[in-house]
Amino acid sequence: MTSRAPGPSVRLGVLAPSSNSNAESSIQRMLAGQDDVAAHVSRFRLPASLGDRIDAEVLGEAPALLADVEPDAVAFHGTSGSWTGFDGDRLLCEQLTAVVGAPATTATLAARAALDALGLNSVGLVFPGPRGIAEEIVAQYEADGIRMPVLSAPEVELANAEIARVGDDWIDALMRPAFSGEVDGVLCIGTNLRSAYRVADFEAEFGIPVIDSATATLWHLLRLAGAARPIPGWGSLLAHG
Image 1: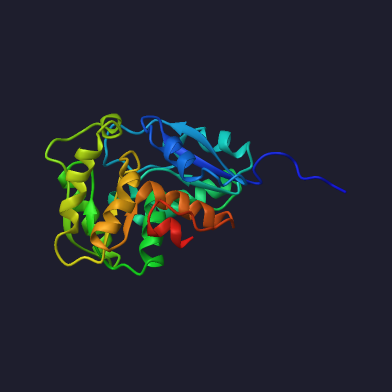
Image 2 (image 1 turned 180 degrees about the vertical axis):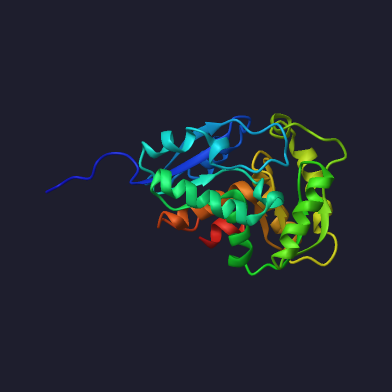
């Protein structure tokens, strides 16, 4: 009788910006109790400008290092494609698959797939960055058939590391305006914003789905790895499986 090797049988690869402190911790909490799945992280440094497209050159050696663990799926854990364009992220996925040898996604493409999975086409936008970038996000999504009649962005611009340190009260104040207006869901874009921890409460209060980009990244990774399953406690998307 052949015994199974110890440890998780499903390996997820995550490419995280060096300033992102939410990626590992949120994934580990969401996967608590999922003993057959492990996430492995490789880091890279973001460009100085938010307007710069993330491509293979920016990621440097990080994908090749991640390939060494032979992941079943890989994700760029960032949302820059939400304002630089979906097509750029699709090209990046092709590049990642060529290097890593596994199906690839990005936080942007995962969030877009989540909207389709939950049947949402009119959503409020939550974005912790500059309003000008938020307006570019609205333009990208509306060109792709998703209405965004309301957006919420902070008055003061925060650095990526600062976004991860804001508390629940700040996050709640940022999220709440996105539920106003005629929307059938809310989309939180920004994988270093810890909005995942507030999703279930806001869904219970307003009765509509809330998609958090970090949560969507894990959800899409599990699907690409052939390991989709419902995970309760994190809102309708992960519960959807």
